[in-house]
Length: 57
Image (tube, rainbow, N blue to C red):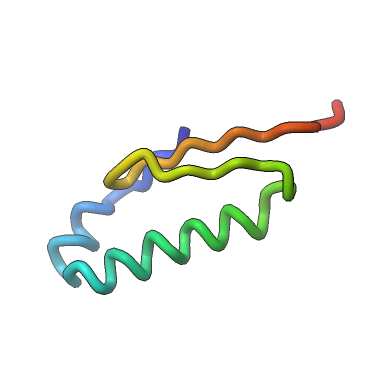
């Protein structure tokens, strides 16, 4: 689980367009830094679920 801090501030201060760009940017960052087998889903608001498969220890 990932919970973004101060997301409400971004949403209320900059509006829906910037909020949507912010969410897309976070999704792109997660996609780029996590293994390709990872499943990333937005649960709602400022919460994301991340499932990572095939991790070698």
